[in-house]
Image (cartoon, rainbow, N blue to C red):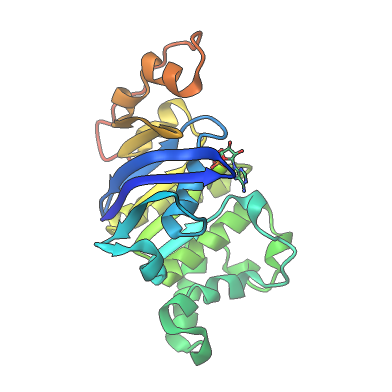
Length: 250
Ligand code: ADP
Ligand code: MG
């Protein structure tokens, strides 16, 4: 399991995260929700060791996450990626396998087969020769998800996978996430989804520098918790249906 223990991070004196603890089990899909600037992206980066932490640690199967990076896939927020990087969509996916094999060995037939299967599953095989920077937002997300699948990652972390994504891509991405969850992957998603869409997640973690509430959507998204997280008192109460079947069943 992913075990985040009392993680804190500071940007030049500003405490972006303060003592955040949470657990994500294999086969579980957990959403990080909270206002802009709540620290969702910072938390994902902190888990990966991509920024210095002032306190705390993140473990995957009892080992520091930074030490088992090949088992972890991270899809950053799209706007944070250098999209001018001259690489084809096919090579983006294939590079997911370097985590498995080491780049010095080159790509054998099984790596190419894994990349092709993953791209076909996400409907992007036909885009394999296109520079990734020229694809639409939805196509890019599907390419990066194909890469996570080809990598055979056990823990998958997404930062806003559905932001600026067309409906068809959103559907394909959601289906793929559902299948990964079913396959026993641990999945942590920072998201701006709202309302009924959150019913797809096993648990929510409502964040604003620290954890405001965690649990099933109906327990977390109460007016009181939302007021505390969003720091405004005039929010309309909202209802989030408890999933009556597997939240990812389609
Ligand atoms: P979220 O993803 O929930 O919108 P972020 O993790 O991006 O929030 O940001 C959390 C807080 O940290 C915000 O106040 C943001 O302005 C600040 N922050 C994020 N990245 C940096 C950075 N590289 N340098 C300084 N402050 C940052
Ligand atoms: Mg963010």
